[in-house]
Structure formats: structure tokens, C-alpha cells
Length: 474
Image (spheres, rainbow, N blue to C red):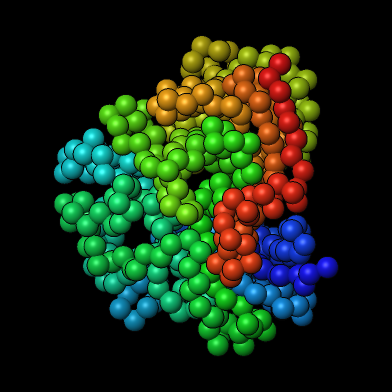
């Protein structure tokens, strides 16, 4: 038996965060959750902020728990959601708390930037799906609404870069994370300086861009003293959580689609080159950076965020309910035909998701969903219809026939969602592993340290280590 290799993966989702200990030994990976915490944004007046320093406190709490294990941990990697950022002044201090991507300050940013740079031209270089919270639109909004903060800014760090900076003191922008913001030349994989200048954004705000698998360095002395952990290298993994999720997906074959299923549903294919055609622009598909130079060609779908908020509101206003309770209620619902469009703006950040789902169904002539089950079915049907439509679009835009859908992420624990996805899309669904982002994070750490040689080897190890469940279309 070989010596075990220990690594830490910090995975920050839009609703929770956790620190996972990975043990790699004899061709298999084992995962153990050491620390988990809620990631709850905060309304301050009319602005929706991330609770940034609470997240950093929780990260350090996880490091303390890891140190208490007294095992030789080789490295750590951090992955988070995309597009959001913090700004640093010339002294390296955070100025202006990072704002949540669901804040409404960017409501009209796409049309305003489109008056400066035609949107088709903007897509032709960046290849990114137009969503009003993309980094380029947030920065444009900051120039208008927080001009003092923007003018004082010396550097921009996206969220995983920011946590890496807090831990090491080193400033960098990781490629996959930066690619989500509509600021890169998708074909050449470099910062689109001309675009930024046209929009009025200072290109010098950005740091050196590093590739996934780059060893950043050691934790700072202050962090080592505070947490008690030492000898751990910080590695820039596929820092966007979907980049890590795709890296950790053991695809059936090259024509399989991936569905990373959590707060957001990210449905797409892994390609070698971006698709920047007029048709891709019109269908509003995104070309985000992947590990090892790959492109994640996908559609962002407002995913289990809607169901998560349904549960939260039901607990607040009606009584305690669990996700298994919601699934049972949906299966038992009298009417099974209610449906929503999960991408409708009314579901972005409402105060009451129950009210919005019911209102959507009424406004679209479907009648009034009654009870938890019918409201939940409206969400299930809305999500899986979007999956079906997206699969059809992907086949058209790529010219490929999709063989199956590999589902990863926490959403695959919902067996009803998996079954309805197979039924609605007519495709075989291979569900697993649940911890796709964590495993892709770990795989890139192992590759950076030389314990595995390639992404393909890493995916084979994942497949050999974790169970997958097949759902066939009925």
C-alpha cells in the first residue's frame, strides 16, 4: 500500500461553503467533510452584499480543523461561483465590500454597454452569454454608482483570487474564473484590452492571469500562526466551481453533455475551441474557460436556487419542511402540469419565492398551484423543460448528437430531478459523483504536484472511486 496524499479543497457555493479533506491512495480518492457553513448574503439598505469576511473566518476555521488532524497535508485549492469580485487599493486593502451578482445595480447595464460596443461584436470576441451580472457589466455599474471606490481601486480580484490573496498575500487572476466575466478574448485566452478600453474600464486593474494547476506558494506566516497549519501549498485550481465540476466529471464519451446541478444549473459540452458564430450569439450560449485549455460551452440556467428559496420561505411562513418532504409532496401533487420559466427575472432575488411561483402560473393562464407539491412541480417542470430545450440547442449549435448527460453536484441527490431530466430530455442520465467541484479541485492539485499526469487520468480515478447511477428515459 502506497503512502496517502492529503489535500484540502475549499468549495464555496452560492448558498453554503465547506472544506473537504481528500486522501489519494492506491488509485482511489476518499473525501471527508471537515467543515461546513451557510453562505448567506446580506441586504444593507438596497444593496445585496456578500458576507465576505465571515466567509474568510469560516475558511480559517476549516484550516484550524485540518491542522488538528496532525497529518501531512500537501496543498489546498479554492473554487467559488463566478463573476463577482473585490477591489483593492494601492496598499492592498479591500475597498467596498463585494456585491452579490443578484444585486439590481446592473439591471440596465447590458443595454448601456451595448450602446458603446455592439453586443454582437462584444460576443464575437468574448463568447460569453449575456447576463447582466457579468463582471464587465458590474464594473461598468461601479463606475456609475460607486465612482469613488472605482477610482481608488488599484487591482481587481475575483472571489477565489481574493481568498487566495488573504491566505498568501499574492495577487493573481485565475483563468477559468476570469473567463466568466466577459472580459477575455475567448479564442486567444487573453485579456481583451481593446474591449475594456472602449467600455472605459482600466485594463491595469487586472492582475497576472494564471492557468489552472499553477502553484501560487505558501500560506503567509500570519495565517500559519493563526490556524496552526503549515507546509501547505496554495494551488490555483479550476477556480470557477463549474470548471472544477467539469474537471471532476467522468464523461461517458466525447459526445456526452455535462449538467452541474446546484444553485445554478450549468448544462453544456466540453470543447477544444470556442463557438463564436452568429447562431451561438443569437442563442446566447457561453464559452467559458476550462482546465487544460478546454472550453466549457454551456447555458446558465437559474437552477435549484428557486427550490432552495421555496423551502426557506415555506419554513418561514408555513412550517418546517425538508427537501425529501418537498419531493414527496411533488410526487403526490394532484396537478402535475404547472410549470415556470426559471430564468424569468422575477425569480432572481425575490423576497418570497412561493408568491412568485404562484404568481407566474396565474399570470400565464395555468391557474393557481395549491400546496407545496404543486408549487414544487411547477419548478421541477420548468427546470427539466429548460434542460430539454438546451440539449436540443446544443446539438444544433455543435453539430453533435449528445449520447448522454453526465449529472454532477448536490442536485443529483434529488432522485426525482434525475428521473424527470431523463424523461424530459429523452437522454440517458448518468448521475454522479455528488462532489464534482471538490473532485475537480483535487484532481488539479494532484496534477500540479505531479502525482497524476493528466486530466484523463484524474477522471479515471474519480470514476473508479465513486458510484454513479444511471437513469434511462421512460
